[in-house]
Image (cartoon, rainbow, N blue to C red; front, side):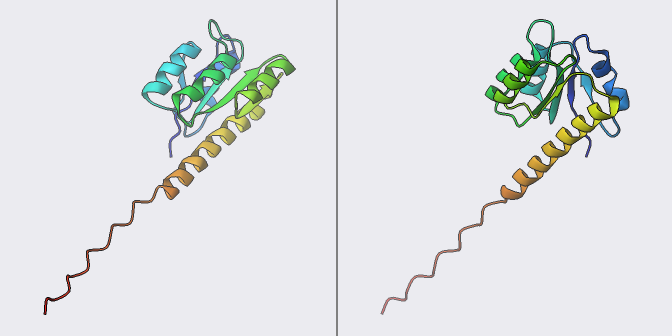
Length: 146
């Protein structure tokens, strides 16, 4: 399965370089949280990875608005400097993972792949439970008239 995450890096160069480090993933880098919301509305993605500090709408704003679209997209937010207030707010918005402070590349990749696996598992479970309906049995033959 090829994944199609959206990455909204803002000024975060580590996030901007992320697509080149992901195997079997067709990531798209977008300029703003608004662009991500527009893209999700037209073609939902499994995961959005965004910096907390974005121009215009923040990553936290993105996470707060996204549930209104009714899509199962997971959100991974990263604050490159420790920010406990943002972490608490992210949790209240249902963010899948909040990365708080400096990270190694492997920690970032682990968080992204975990979110992608979680999204794939949820999709598989939803498809399993959405089995086609059982057809109604044919009507019983009418009793003969004496």
